[in-house]
Image 1 (cartoon, rainbow, N blue to C red):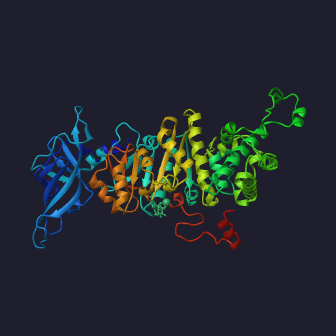
Image 2 (cartoon, rainbow, N blue to C red; image 1 turned 90 degrees about the vertical axis):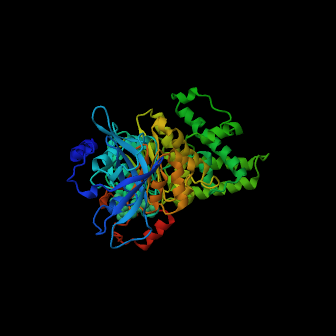
Length: 569
Ligand SMILES: Nc1ncnc2c1ncn2[C@@H]1O[C@H](COP(=O)(O)OP(=O)(O)OP(=O)(O)O)[C@@H](O)[C@H]1O
Ligand SMILES: [Mg+2]
C-alpha cells in the first residue's frame, strides 16, 4: 500500500533507465572499475568547485549501477581518493567501494521489482549513480505483506520505513543499542503500532525503570508494587525458594520447604471435619479424605509444591511446628526453625504485601491472570509491569512467574490471544554467562523464544549490551533493530546473529545517529537503514515522575522519597 503511493510519487523513476543528453552531468557519477563477487569499485570524480554529487558517495548510501534493463544496487562502505591526497584547484578522483545488495529488474508484466542477490554482475565501465527514489522504495517494499510505517529511510526521508508487524511479533524481535539512542522510545512506537494492527494481541512489558507508564496513558494498565497482587502460591518451588532464600537457597531448607508447601496445599484442599458436616450436601463429601493430607510423601511433594493451587501460610507454619515437634525428627531442628523464621519475616514484611496480603482472598489464579494479561482488555491491551518498586530479591522470580504464565496462557488459549512479553534490559534475565541470572527465568523466556511462535507467545528483547545477552535468545529473534553500538564486541554479536548482515552494514553501527537503526530480518524486505518516527512527548517513555524537559513534575516529600527507596509505596 505504501509502495503504491510511492510509485505514484516516483512514477517517472520506476521506468527503465533512460538517459538523455540534456540530463545534468552530475547524474553520471562514476564507472565500475573492478568487481569481485559481492563487491564493486567505482571510479568517480569529485568536481573542483565542491558542487556535485559527493554526498552520494557518503558511507552507508545506497547507489545504483546501470545495466540497461536492470540495475544493481549496493551500499557504499569505503571511499578514498585515488592519489591519497587532495587537490583544492582541480577535480579529485575517488574510488568508492560498494557492497552489492541486489538488483531491480523488470518482470514479464512490465513491473519493476527488487530481489536480493545478483544474477548479472556489472561489467567494467558500467555507469553508477545515485539511486532513484523509486528503486529505493522498491528495495524496501514488503511485497504482498502488510506494512506498517515506523519511520523513514535515512537516505530519503520521503520514503517510509515499513515493517511487517505480523512477522515482527511472531518471529520475535530485538532492539539493541547503546544508552540514550532511543530504544525505549522506539519500543513505545512499535508497541502502539502493534496493538493497533493486532486486536488479539496483549503486551506485557517488564519495565525495570518504571518508564513506560508515561508512554501509554490511554492504552496500558500500570501495575506497580502497590497495585500488584501475585499470590505466593502461584510461585513454583524454585521461584518461591529464590525469594525466601534471597537467591542463595540452602539445600536442606529447600527440601523442608518442598514438603511444607505440599502439606499446606493438601490441608487447604482437605476440608476440616466441621466444614464437612456443615456442608453435607456438597460434593466434597463424595471425595475421600486423604489420610496423608498433612504428611505429603517426598515423591508427591515435588509435584504438589509446583501446582498453582492455593495454600495458607498459617498452614505452612503449623506444618513446620509439627515437624519440629515430631518424636523422630526428619529434619534438623535448626533448619526447621531457620526456615520458619525466614517465612515469618517474609510474611510480615510490608514490601512483600503483594505476595501475601490478599493471597488467600483468592481461590484461583483467574483474577490475577485476568488483570495482568488484560482479559478482558477493557481498551488497555498493554500491561506495564513496573519492577523498580519491587524488592530487588524478588524481581527474578516475578519475571519467571510472568514469563511462564505468558507462555501457558497463549498455549491454552489456542490462538484466541497472542501474548508479547517485552523484556527491557533483557541481559539481566537471560545473560550470556550461564552462571549468572536465575535459571527458571531463563528457562521461561527461552521457552517463549524457542516454542512460543506455535502458540502465539512472542518475545521482544531490548538491551544496551547484546554481548551480555544469551546468544541463543538473540538468534531466535528473527528481526533485529540495531541502533548505535560503539563497542566492537557488540557489533560482532550482531553480525553473527544475523544471516543477512553484511560486514559493511555492521560497520556503520558505531556511527549512526540517535533514533536511527538498521533493521534486519523477517519483518523487513532487505536490511534497512532507517530513522524511527518522532514520537510526541506525551507518548514517550519517561522516568516515573519526570517530564521530558527533565524537570520533576512536583517535588516529592521526604516521607514519599523514603518510601520509594524502601520499595513500599
Ligand atoms: N523516536 C523518538 N521520538 C522522540 N524522541 C526520541 C525518540 N527516540 C529518542 N528520543 C529522545 O531521546 C531520549 C532518549 O531515548 P530513549 O530513552 O528511548 O533511549 P534508550 O536507548 O532507551 O536509552 P537507555 O538505554 O538509557 O534506556 C528520549 O527521552 C527522547 O527525548
Ligand atoms: Mg531505554
